Image (cartoon, rainbow, N blue to C red; front, side, top):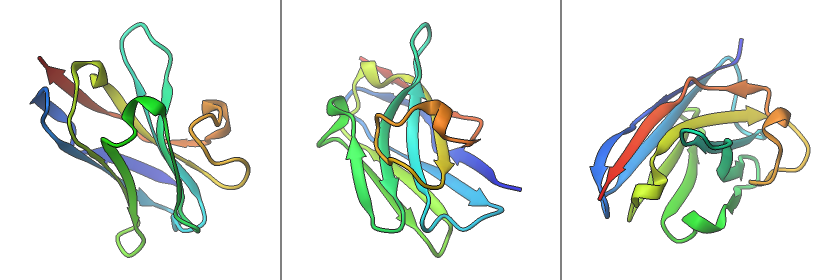
Length: 126
């Protein structure tokens, strides 16, 4: 059974950093399309950063380019999101998602990711 567990969220001041982790079990992440999504209150869930774990190809939404970095550790079967220069607009619940095959980018529909974690809250104060 595929399971994704996020951790690393918290509260920081603007300009600070956090690193989110997504520990996967029940499958090997290599070869999967995996990504980080976020959802702020009253807003739709949006793709933040996506990685095709086989090739390492990445995609970021424009608002986080240059500030966030998605990466993987195949040995630990874990996905990461390093978030630097955080802004109050980054405040949201962050989710890890995974699936196999198809287009792998931030514009991939959330309906095309079968596996989701429970989320971790990120709050950035000004």
